[in-house]
Amino acid sequence: MNFPHNPTGAVPDKGTWGALVELCDERGIHLFSDEVYRGLELNRDTTLAQGADLSPKALSLNVLSKAYGLPGLRIGWIACRDPVVLDRLERAKQYTSICNSAPSEILGLIAVRAGDELLEKNRQIIAHNLLSFNAFFSRRPDLFQWQEPQGGCVAYPRYLGSEGVESLCTQLVEEAGVLLLPASVYHSSLTTTPDDRFRVGVGRGGPQEDLDVWAAWLDTRRRA
Ligand SMILES: Cc1ncc(COP(=O)(O)O)c(C=O)c1O
Picture 1: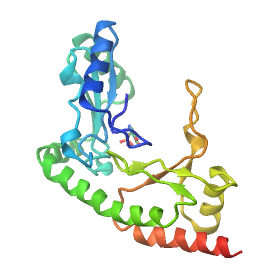
Picture 2: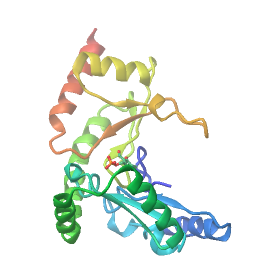
Picture 3: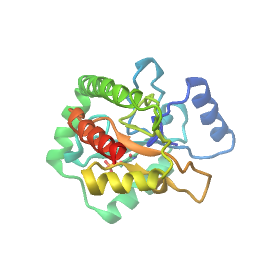
Picture 4: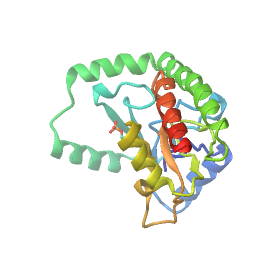
């Protein structure tokens, strides 16, 4: 599981999340919960409990590179209350690397202790950016079906243009240098996936410049 979800930005309600954890517990399944965008919900009341807090078998994955905005530290972790799982994870980790960077661990500790402030700062950046994205997409209802992410820093809108989203993304990056991830990137052999959506990042400060380049490219194409 991964909530807030990359790429859709979806966050289930707490009842659904609790039922899912329970379902795994009843069946003896280790729920692997990727929580790297946890804390970036637009509405903080919707933040889900960590999987590892709800279930003695669940694994909660987190990193400093996403919601905390500190990718340079290269620090992440898995929380789990099952000692057998922890032992196996430790062995796997030691097989590939002796230890983390010690300065990164110290900086990571400082970051986690200041976690509330970092998450608040990053939530504000996203909320502010979304004003620009909402305005951009609301001006083009014939081309895009836009929905704000409930959490996280990416969104997965629908492209309505007749040439299709793969063509849009290829032309946009080649002609204007604006990179979006088309639906084919998210193709899965496990389930059907939409073929008219694209992922766009909404977490980097100052998106207006990129949106202006994108808008100018769309306008030029419309006139051609
Ligand atoms: C949902 C999710 N989980 C985990 C990761 C991995 O994070 P990192 O780059 O810190 O290894 C990513 C990175 O994009 C992600 O989107």
